[in-house]
Length: 148
Image 1 (cartoon, rainbow, N blue to C red):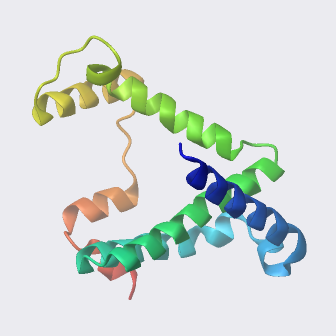
Image 2 (image 1 turned 60 degrees about the vertical axis):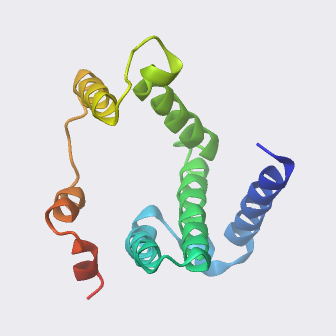
Image 3 (image 1 turned 30 degrees about the vertical axis):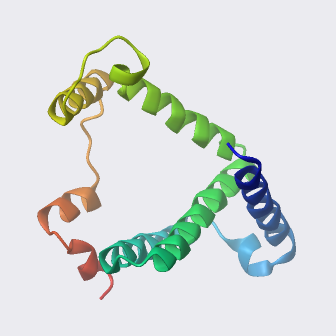
């Protein structure tokens, strides 16, 4: 990771630390209180992508990055997990789910990659799907209904 990115992420986390101490609103937030705002931010990102607007996409990605940092900060304060745990968890998952890149499994087409991915998820016992995920798969723009 380049120095500029490392410094930018450190700055975000330092600002969030200060907000959790000095701002009553930020201090009172919980995972439950942030939930609906997070869903709204995801919908706004989808809209920005549909608009093909790089500045709007960047703004909405920043909002989601804040939410990830915020949830991780709350969890850390409660002794549950840290942002490092989140990053390491997804890194481990990506390496595991991409054996065609990080191990000796052959996958030369997208179809083969998806087949391997599905097989790994079954082996992991990860057949669960979220209620919202099912909803989004049924309606191409189902997220629009959530905003009303």
